[in-house]
Image (cartoon, rainbow, N blue to C red):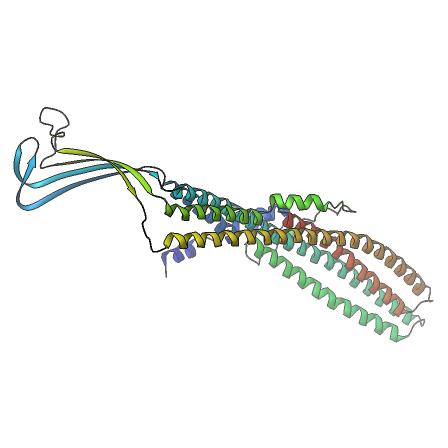
Length: 433
């Protein structure tokens, strides 16, 4: 097993038990998820890699300074010409070389490489923002799912409580001789069905809680609880044009595509640099002697055994097997692809904003419609309860009224949290944090 794997296994697991017993806010959940997300960490590494790429591109522009020193010992003596003593013999040779090289002109290729690396860095940073916003939406979705599951559980629990009252009332009427045993059986069947729905609702809460824990990157066995969100402010004042403009300005995916286009344009410049000559200058100093010279004194021997040179060189491709032409064509194809990708992403982002707006408007309308449905269903159930209490109504009418009220309340809960989810999706579609 690799050492890294052993190190990961030996690392102490973080204790998350402190999260139990308190209500987490959405901001706290987002902070925990950002700390634990592998996808976000991977994107951060991508930014660091892009930063290194910019430094690497600059290395083709800045001068290169090198030093080499050596010590050689032979089995027998050898003769050497030295400036101080003429011909001398020794089995030892000391050497050192110091050089400076500076590219002067590379056909613009080195500058284009810097531009391409900078575009890659901007793309990496936008990829990080995109991953962060994806994580935000995932956590918000799981957070809202848990809130909705808990609210639906309350609805189902209240329905079961009312059904138990129906059973008790039916039994009381039966003992008084005012209703038949069939009413009691129907009430118990109603209670049993509602208890089944309650069991499903409880399991939905457990599933939603585990899903949120998974999104946060913590053990799924942690018993999380979350704080409710503020009530939706309706009607929602939708400004589609504003959000479309903001999406074009902010959306990280578009920033990634724009950086890709800039990088592709720089790649063309780099490819075309193969048609131009490369000009560079250099200076070097070299010293060889059979003994280490003194820094001072008449016999320092540095000037006698040293030499320096200044070079100015130019190279030009006469024929490279059509490599430059192929590189240019490939870079031009890459630019065309990047532009098409940007155009398609632009259309996809605008469509996403439009769809998110429609979903939000729909959720807004559903909240008001569901609220009216709940009000009417509560009134109908109250009337049926009164009629049944007076002996004028029948149990099936009371049951239908309870079913209608339960369905209306379920729809209301779903509409409220669909609204919250639609707001989160709109923010993601626009590119807002």
